[in-house]
Length: 125
Image (cartoon, rainbow, N blue to C red; front, side, top):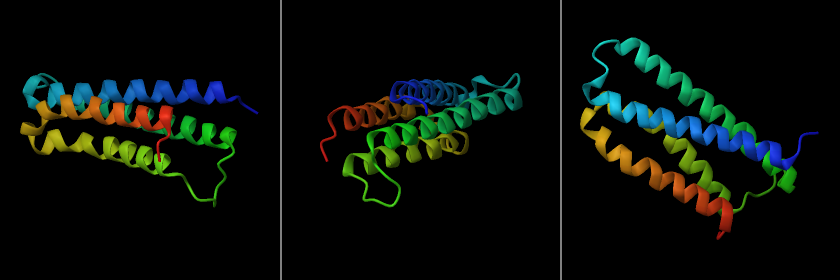
């Protein structure tokens, strides 16, 4: 069995990858990727996909170590975190469709990450 600390490390690595990918999306969606747009979009999509996978793997591994079982009711803080990560997974497509949303993304992404961290640390709900 893997330890809680290992799953925490995997979770944090996933967070770093998704934040890096979303920052790259926000910077390149506004037109900075004209030289090689296919390579750029593919690279950040891979980083984002790997980040989401690692966040889920680490998060659910930590839940197992905390004793939160499948089928039991999830606490409110966990629902908020799942909602935040689902939003961050879906928000990546927005700047490519609507380039005007790229700049606000640079503010929204850290705020959502901070909300998820707050929920994980303090578990207020």
